[in-house]
Amino acid sequence: MSGKTVRETGVKANSCIEALQSWFLANKLSLNLVKTSYSVFGDNTVSDDFELKIGVTVLKRVTSYKYLRIIIDDKLTWKEHVDYV
Image (cartoon, rainbow, N blue to C red; front, side, top):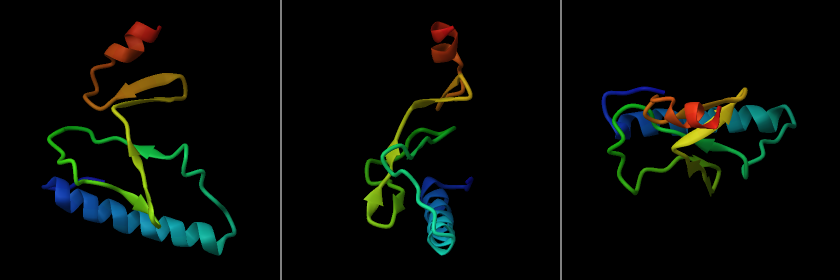
């Protein structure tokens, strides 16, 4: 998701997450909420009250994550990945 403000982006993201949750339920699928997290790229001046939810579960915000053996950080510096390699 992207937006002009963090608040706008959060509203869009939560709306999309609700649609995904409905799709999962309609197709009798589930999402492992313990492993589900999100990251904010770009302006990282996100306030502490910013949160994304699936149902009543608040998703965990991470500053980096591993995807297909590549570590991606929220500043897109690749430092963690280079250190890992």
